[in-house]
Amino acid sequence: MPNRTRPSAIPHSDLMTRRTRDRILLPVALSLLLVVVALVTALTGMVYVPVAAGIIALAPLVLAIAELRRLIADSRDILREMATIAEKNEEVINSFSHKIREPLNNLVLLGNMLSETTASPKQQELVETFIASTGSMVEVVNELTMQTAGNITFERRGEIRFRLGPIIQDTIGLMKLNRRHDQSVVVYDDHGEGDSEYRGDPIILKQILIDLLSAAISASAGRITIRIQVREAGEREGSQKVEFTLTSNNPVVFIGEGRQPYPLAGRLIRDYGGSWQEATAGTGSYFVFYIFMHRADKVTKPVAASTLIKGMTAEKSRKEMKDLSILLVEDNPINQRITQLMLEPLVRKLEIARNGKEALDMFGTSRYDLILMDVQMPVMNGLVAAEKIRGLEMSTQGHVPIIAITANAMLGDREQCLAVGMDDYISKPIEPEVLIEKITALI
Picture 1: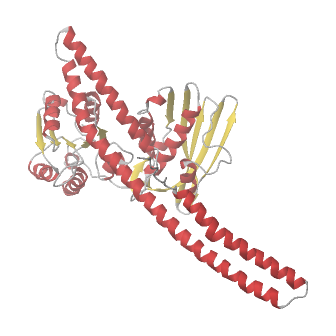
Picture 2: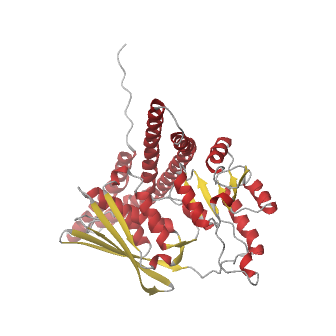
């Protein structure tokens, strides 16, 4: 049988080009031609021909205008559809990241615990190979997270209260997830500006910094050091002007003068009423940009109950790890068991709640020194549970530290946890040393 070739699909862009040419440009050209005919015949003294040509010229012009309006409406529909597709893709990546980090977290913790046990040289070699392979998987997932973090999200977030310093430090930490940036050093000079509190969308600031830093690091052939400095530069209509300066030890291009269309960082800066300036001086470069942010209202945090009792010191007495009573809120039985194996030898008591509702019930009947809270759980998730716990504490003037331990590691997840009142955040796969450091810092 002869081979039959399937007709190739015409790209959507080609269809739009043909539609614009055939239904808009050609009718407009015909209309202009008729107008020229009308003018020429009018100059020669004719009367009826110019009038007829002018009337006929209106028809293709009206058709072209109608088609242009339909084209604009169709383009808007296409943009909305693209936004929906982008959101769905982001949801798929978020879901993949969450699902893969759960078992990865268990593998990392088990590998660490196995390496601490006595074993034969052959067993030790197998454990080290297991740990190295798991580490490679973690790097792959982190690279995926980093690539997604550089893309603008379509989700509209409400106002979040945040401090500038931790947001910048967290962005620098996010940059370190990418192995391609191993030869780069990003330093944040904090001279007190980092303690300033603002309200708004800190994810936008992260996206600006990630885009600028990625562009500078990718454009440099050798090792590069970038320093970030921040200062407040006046107010305008109730908004605070905040100026950011990025300096590098190598000549780099952050955005590029006159570049069109602007990359993500440039569009976001302009959308927030800001502007930028960049230049190369000697062997280095600098990039200065500013955006306007709203200052956060001062909030008086509840004082610990013990400080309200006369005769007791105002300072909270610190506890040792071995004296702690910890509530672990986790729905996955495997995660529960592995965390038990890791923490039970180190603390006085470790109790488990399978969801946010159980955590609330146990919080109301027992006293805990610290809560480790998962985010995605049935019945009641960790964000809702943390918010309700903070609401209960308003009446008792107490405060139990909450650390989010979650497989949610995408851009904005940390801010969501802190916005509902959690004290710290750690994404899976976790390192036991990092978790212990965070626990120690809060007790």
